[in-house]
Length: 274
Ligand SMILES: N[C@H](CCC[C@H](N)C(=O)O)C(=O)O
Figure 1 (tube, protein in one colour):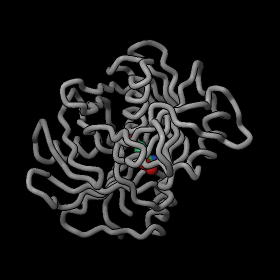
Figure 2: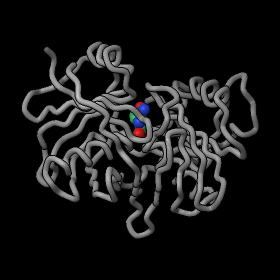
Figure 3: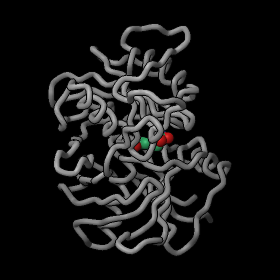
Figure 4: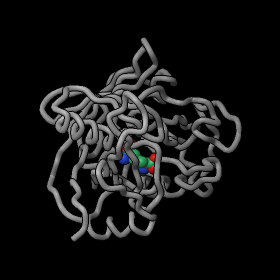
């Protein structure tokens, strides 16, 4: 009988969450993939004992293809909710590879998380060469659609490239261009590929081909990256409603401290055993 897990989602971004406070959990890439075979998910998440004062836990994320990653925005909301429920608190801080994150309740099964500052230097995304991350030069082989010119590049603790659309991003484009760009040599660590259509100063339609997970129903760090990329190009303000396939997130790139604040729902679906 395997260890228990929680099946959760954030706007349809699917998670398997393992509590590792009492029993270590250090899965190999094969084990990460095997869990996905057993219970399909986008990201696997573990909640470990804290390694630093002021943090309630240390949290790790893996894509379903097996590699560990430094950030997962929707997963951060799910973990913050679990930790607040467990501690009967209305706010919580925890550590990840990508840095310290804090969350607070913002309604029933709605969580607001501070995702910290976006990293905007070329070598922080990272890119393979120095470029202006407001608009990078990216040649994508056979595809030469004008909308694919000069996307923005941002890290939220994980790498993102954001294309600026003037219409609904269709499946063929998101899957075709996304899968091509995910492993493009300009991104030494791979990249999450966002397609953002700024519909108004405070509203962006977004679809994301995720590194290591493909087209998901929502991508929290992708929503943060897209808002920052659009604001840097003057296409939107610093606060917007993000329309993802799975629903809406509110993102604000705060003037006061440059932190990116994300608010949205989470859902606990069922418990199971690995
Ligand atoms: N695929 C991402 C990790 C999960 C991001 C996404 N699920 C989110 O909500 O931020 C990466 O490889 O960096």
